[in-house]
Image (tube, rainbow, N blue to C red; front, side, top):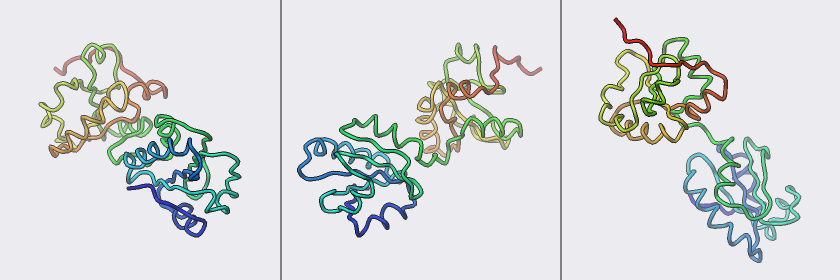
Amino acid sequence: MPVIKVTDATFEREVLAAQLPVLVDLTAVWCEPCKTLTPIVAQVARELEGKLKVVEVDVDRSPMVAQSFRVKSIPMLVLIAGGQVVDQSLGLVDKAAILKMVKPVLPAAANEVAPKDLAELLKRNRVLPVDVREASYYARYHIPGAINVPAADVLTKAQELLPTDGRVRVLYGRTSDDAKVLVESLRTQGVDVAFLAGGFLHWEADGFEIERGVPAAAS
C-alpha cells in the first residue's frame, strides 16, 4: 500500500478512525531532511502492508493537524493506534528506528504464539514445541517436552510435523526469525505450524520453565 496523503479534511477518517495502527509522517515541500525520510517511510509502508497504515501530512497545507500535534520542527513521525497517540519521533531517523517504534502496535501474525500462551497450551497438552536449533544447544536446555528438528532438516521432515496427534507444532529457535522463515516455507507445503514469538531467548527471559539435558527415550 502506498503512503496516503492526508489533509485536515480527511485526517479523522483516514487516521483516527483507521482499523490499523497509523504512522503519520509530518512533512513540507521545503524541508530537506523530510526529502531524505520520505523514501524510508515509503519502504516501511510497503514492508508492513496490511499491518500498518502510513500517511503523509503537509503541515503547511494542513495547519489544523499540525496544530493538534504541536509541530515545532519537522520531520516528525507520530504513531497512532485506536485513535490515540502512542509514540512520536522528531528529526531524521533510519528504517531500523521506525520499525522499532511501530513494532509494539503491529498485529501479531496468525501463526505467532506468545510465550505466555505457549506455556498455557503446554499445560493443556495442546501443542508440541519443536526446537530448530542445533542438537548441541537443544541438549543443554530447551522448552519442556520439546522435540529437536534442526533447521537444516525441517523442510525434508515436513510430513513429520503434521499434527497427527491433535497437537499444533510450535517451532522455535534462538529468536523469532530463526523459526518464522521455516514456518512460512512449511505452510506453503500445506503443513500448518506456528512459531514462538521472540524464540527461546524470549521464553527464558520471561522466566518460563526450561528443561536441561536430552529427554530419556520412551521404553
